[in-house]
Length: 319
Image (cartoon, rainbow, N blue to C red; front, side, top):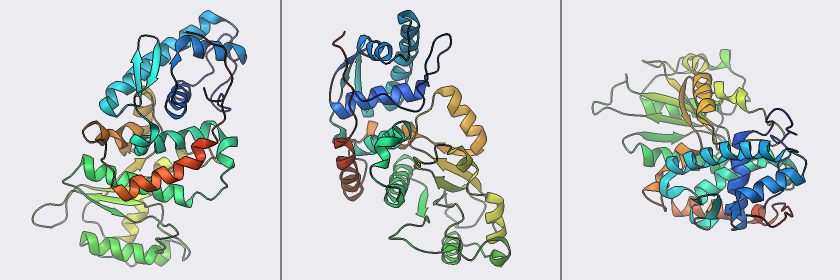
């Protein structure tokens, strides 16, 4: 079992101060990355041992909610879910490297809940962000095969500044620039919050088609408040840079998994297309090898040294 998260796990006496999404991520990670079975009794034991809960019955109330949420996740991902749920026991359904897309998103989420572990690998998130963009682009291409996907985000291997991004985007969409870039953006801007463009073209190649401008937020451990990125990219700003025939919609991709209520709230904040962990890795239900071989290898290479150093907890035998 992994060490308890330092975020999202508060002492709970009269109210539950453990976030359900954090608890379920911790459980999934403990089972998948440790390749071990866990029972609900094991989890209650560690919550009591670490003084997160002092009343066993109250802790069991939390576990009841967690089991419902884990079963809901299982339904969402079908064959792509990493756990097998049998009664009150959880087992790994496969090794973490079989579906590196899900393991990558889960590890990115875990980095928010275990920031001391994540900091061991430095504060340069460039590769992490580039890998997440690759995963998002390939996921959209698999889920929406009639759509076209174009990556625009800045990275060490993709260093185009905003003027080039605007020109490329206009050529790709067949839309003219407005000529207002200098007025509305800084010369040092990279991509003005735009990471991926998604369109559903029509056979006549004319405008007036579904168009999403997307932000990919992979998570930054020294800034856990990622919610401000839900309003990125600024589609009104982009309308001052490109003369769109139809105002584009916003899209937002994140590796986190949300409860149903939280997902709805985030959808409202994005006011467009929201891709969470379960939507991003959904192609695995039909094709476990849905990622390109090159991207899958890069994800595994990124994950291996990090998973080897995950902090483990000592717990009493239970269940």
